[in-house]
Each structure stands twice: as structure tokens, then as C-alpha cells.
Image (cartoon, rainbow, N blue to C red; front, top):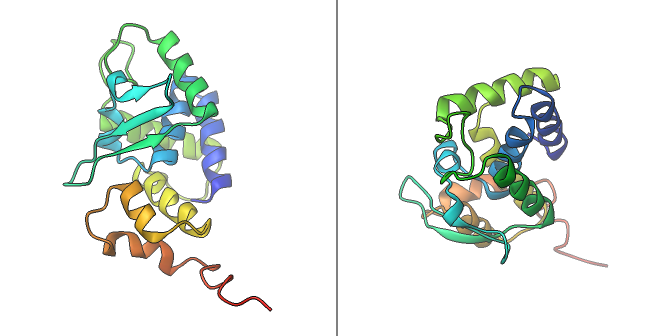
Length: 174
């Protein structure tokens, strides 16, 4: 997905259901940090430091944990989620205050994709891949992308840079 498609998905999620802001924030955090759906639903408030602007990302599938900065838009969105769902351990919770399930997130994204009018079915892992492609297209270092996404093996990261149309753009300057 392109950045524009992710923005359309977020906008659609914000307009659907009773939990629009939570769902929009969920997509934002998943995209900005390249989270797997299971990492997203397991995200706890103790892993988020809104004062310092940091999120402690615990990777699954034997991935490398890391600490990511969170920016103003994310901090404001997360503060509102915290206000809307007080006294919960998990960041993204259901009406019953339990963590969302991976199935719920899949359904939420599929519904938002339809509402956004995207011409393909949307699933959570598309956000993670979109993160990798966006960072590669922005010219970020492959090793930095590897650590950001928590890949132990660089081969899992190289796929994002192989298709980057601008990867040779600044090799020679006249």
C-alpha cells in the first residue's frame, strides 16, 4: 500500500464503528512502526512512554526488540486512546477492556479497506510491508530498516530495497 492508501484506510477506519479514533490510531501505530498484528494487540501501556516519546517494540517470530521514537501525531492520538479507555493494561482494547484479538484487527482492516474503496482486500501484514517499502523509498539505510522492523536476517529486509525505483538516483552527480 502507498502512503496515500494508508491515509485513506485510516480515514475510513475513523468513520466506521463506535471506536473510530482507536481504530485510526491502531492503523497509524501499526504502519509507523511496522508491527505485526500479534505485536499490535500485545502492545501494553507500560511499553509506551508518552513523556519521552518512545515505544518499546517487542518483536515476535524471534525478531530483535527495539525502541522507536514516537512523534507528535502519534503521541496525541495515543493520549486520546488512553483517555477514552482508562485503566487498561493494553493500548488497544475492546469494550470489555480486554486486548483486541488478531481476528478483530483483521476484520477491522478489511472493513476499513472496503469503506476506503481500495481495489484489493486489506490485511494487517500489508501495513508492515508498506512500512518497509516506504522507508526504502525514502532512502533509509537497509541495515537501519532491518533493525527498525526487527529482522534478524538481512534477506528479509532486502526485498524492500530491491524494488525501490530511486535506489540509484544519487549515485552520480554532474
